Image (tube, rainbow, N blue to C red):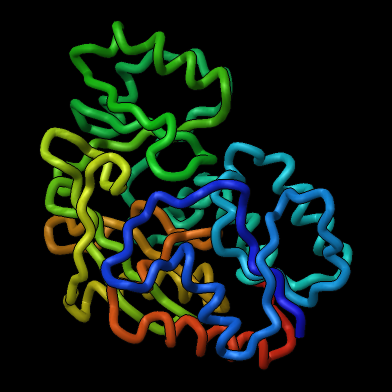
Length: 298
């Protein structure tokens, strides 16, 4: 079985926790295990996709900047009979943060959100009232990291409106209450084939809200309560139970895990932060390949 290891024309910004670098070392590791797997940049016009049986998404980290092109690429390789990990239906559903509305409607705990469509021209103040918060986070529905993410303040709403409306001229956004619990850390639960693997906590630097390392955030391994693991697993049971890989990101609010994002497209998996994680990833991949058919579920 010939596998394309899907990446992009760029470089990652994650720092490994030990001598295993997920961005640089995972592909050689899989090759040493005997897999017939080759790196391919997803938007390389010279790639002959017909020669591949499976496309394994790993680091196509610019897809949100080339959203239409990425969707066309998915359609093209699907038409050629290439299978995708994660599967096509799951990836398409997960690329746009509107999916969070469906999870909330299913009754699972999600940080509240209001979705603002492109060219929205409304008033900001009612958003603070609806979300019962004096500070809001506004982020694109199609994005990665904290790109184009801003904080809105009730007392500065009139002044900040111009910035918000300028962003809304570019695409759909969602607005959520600013959660003070982010200072305690954003939890990421990583699963392979719906089996729990490991957890890390990301904390922002003092005075910031962004947890990514590129903004000065820190990452540490964590041992969560079993109840938190079960809460994180519940999202996968209902919405991604056949996913090879999944990262469930959220906050602990008054003792409950609340979802921020369910990462099923191209999440960094923090494989260097847990002993045996890379072997668990490999084992899950082999299990998926052994099934012969990648199952959709949306």
